[in-house]
Image (tube, rainbow, N blue to C red; front, side, top):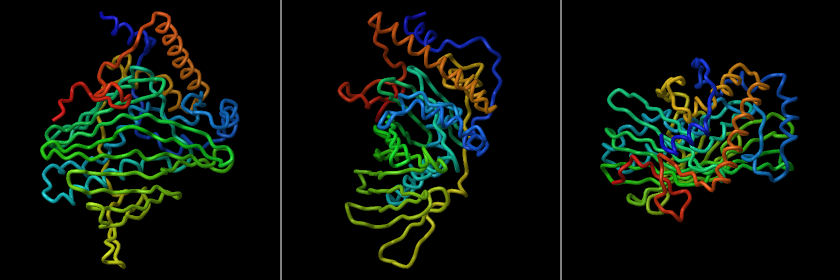
Length: 376
């Protein structure tokens, strides 16, 4: 066994237990965010935070957690991938761009109706893998936590038969604003969709997330900020502004000429309007009518020790039972073990390196690419 393999086992030391599968697709069910224990847990939460603090480096109580890692949460991006499955065969570049924009909006609607749902911060070297078995093709996904301080996640989706890949690197930053009674999370890094047979690349930015009612009122998550989707080859570009009340507005351009405007509820219906036809709005995307494609994940008992569901298994089971005390206990054990390993690595003057992703540019800490992808 190599030193690297030894480190992975050491980092993700998991007790010998009998694994049983629990549901992970009900993370946003209201039952996880409503209950009499919320107020007392909020008091515990407030003990650990200070104004302006980076929440990602704060021990958050279990009641704000959803029962999966950030690496798995990123698979939500492909829940509605049928919107882009045939994009490589579309002749009209405008229709291709429409498909990308529809899929992009659909990536961000999956938030709880009430309450807060924050995924686990992945441990260094943590991996999540899955695939979607479609009617005539397979979409694969692989991700790795490539850095802990700062936290950086690298991910790669690919469907070879359908000629597209989506890949990116994500560095979240979260902050608390007590006078505004909200917290926010911004996400930095590249996010790209590439149509391989057309050599078309779409550059996208990540939506931010805001949590209202942190100190008083009802806590609720919403997307926020302004995002861009752009294809330099075709000249199409979209700007989207995420507003309160789960609303969005946007504009679509071709070579800086405004062609269309977008408006609507990104959890319900988004409409498109041609400025030349001022009184006519057409349905662009109906979120509630979208088909959701289920992913296939290796059973937890058969996963490697550093795979997400095995790393966080005890925490997830406790959250599934709404046993927050147990979830906090198991979460703290994992985090303390990681701190101990980092300290040991520091004493030995060892530098950890990712196993599945590598930097495309050594000077850019967010330029990770999957080593199994041959860029065309």
